[in-house]
Image (cartoon, rainbow, N blue to C red; front, side, top):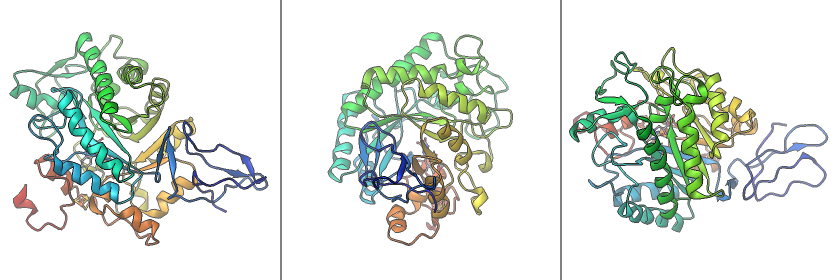
Length: 421
Ligand SMILES: Cc1cc2nc3c(=O)[nH]c(=O)nc-3n(C[C@H](O)[C@H](O)[C@H](O)COP(=O)(O)O)c2cc1C
Ligand code: SF4
């Protein structure tokens, strides 16, 4: 018998269980093994699960996806964006995570990004969380600082971006869109980032979000600190792995001090770089362990710095065969073995593979992004018995479109796509 999930509402059969680790408020989703054979109880992968003390309809998470036009010029979420996110909730997903939201006016790469820095932003997001809760959905906000990648926008504002180090030959100089307008962050600037994360998380809680996520993957400022390629500091924020992960840990503690013990705090962590010579997965695994001790309850496992080819990016492509699926699977499995609660995100496309990871206990939750952009009702389809693979072909036109300010959607079937961008 294959091991399988047990729905949180289900009661384990009397006498048949060797280990009972019941899901419920404050407990992680876990697996049951049978006393006699040592194999697992079958369960329902579509059953309700707990995210700390929040009950989710199922373990499927819509991984963060930024959208053009998500906010007005002042950074307040638009009604179109609220409508778009509520659509996903109506499709029966367990948890929705918003696209990246800036923790300060200088944290993201362009004007008109979503922000969470003042009361107007709280009021806007309150409309979103109310609309989601009216549909019995749950939603987390992704808080972000993009560090060196804000260089172009900071130049427009007459400022410089911050980065861990100033490196003339840094790995990004050949990347399209990179603008070298930055300096190595001072101690004071690092402390300001950490407290801004805490303050934004407090605002997120006030706005009614069920959880917060910190973006520490995909070239974010935190990923830049963790990577030996972009962090050449020799103070307490650089050098050893512990020092390079210090900004993550201090951020986790800052958020925890603002939101209290019961509130779910997720870290999307880049546990290995896509660039040769960058962060390796063993160090990423150790960093994940440090973060778990510093305020983060759940780790969404992804990659850190990205290279120039699609095979080096979080938006991996091509994904045409089972061995190309689930690029974070091995990393997630190891980190889960260390005792973490995890979301496995990146390149998952086939029901068979997803079911296997759940049944093997390789992760607690499944994060999907492009498959849900392509087909918001995918989880319902699978649940209703049509288990054929996601129809997303990983062409990344959606990613290109949002980078040109277009709304998030699947663009593969749009014949005039090239005219639009
Ligand atoms: C259009 C688009 C926008 C994205 N925006 C974000 C973002 O704001 N924050 C983030 O952490 N990841 C973002 N991602 C990455 C996804 O969350 C996910 O990690 C990645 O796409 C791999 O998962 P997938 O293969 O299921 O798409 C974005 C991806 C796409 C396609
Ligand atoms: S545009 Fe391409 S990558 Fe994006 S959702 Fe559609 S098929 Fe998938």
